[in-house]
Image (tube, rainbow, N blue to C red; front, side, top):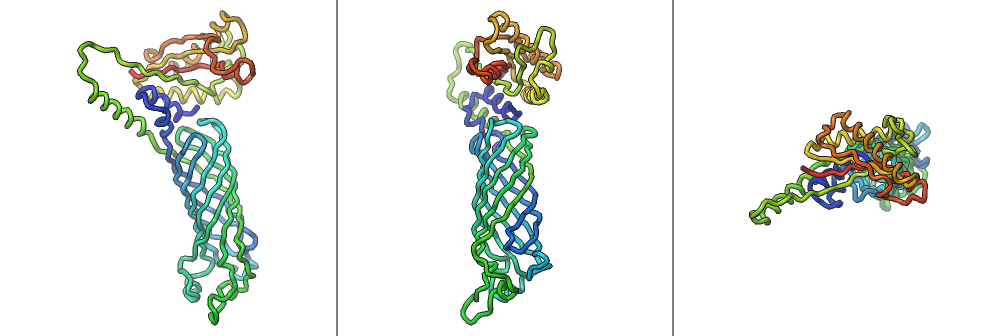
Length: 371
């Protein structure tokens, strides 16, 4: 669970908004990238630098859509009729990426598909003018498919690596036919390029970053709801108890070893390897609570069903105590924390019949209430 998930759940607890609103948090992002274009051999161009930038949005926790711009200027190869010149290409496309794994996981592989258009300029300006061609080149349809992986470094910043194939339906750059009857041959024929009208398939390998924007949605909804309550609620004749909206946050990713912590054992040795992943999530919980100073949190520990009820009750209390101590030792005021409380095996969130289910049940939760 990353900070953006924690932020959303805290906002949910404070404002009572629906999950759909929480998913809007930080949904838009900027995605610059850089890499290499391994051109189709029939282009007669060398491998070239590819650069691009996109603006994307999360449609749901698994699907993102990017609006992308890319450019690469490839040198014609040394044995090409245009050696010493460049083939300029500009790409505009819309790409969808389907991510596997849970929202907030560190590494998330994905598959990608997109459609768009490529603008070509394989010849210089005076040649284009001579043959009555558009001075900035022509546009042709393109499609792309690929695979990649994204690593979430923080709530806003992520790394992307991607390998894609791009089909470019360019049927005019190397068309050596006459433009019109009685007119000179096309530039391709003039320079001696072989006829090629079936399009090209290039390989594109890129690395890049995504930087997420957001943070205003939950606040706006909170303001609107408060305003509506003020307008519609009549003046109370008697003091009323405020309605407490509670959200339970499962610190998924903070995983305990079986039968740990033992009495007197510190928190980190009791965590399942790699412990750095669990510590990172705890640090993010600390950071989130510091960003929401009015939030009051109850720290609850739970176990699987292995062992007696009495033993599991003590074990759950030790787990809650370990997280409680970690929060307070890293700057969260103890006055904002209830507990630590243990519930033993009484509140499972998964089956205890499988190793995976028991691992999920060995957990610590935060119950969040706005003050």
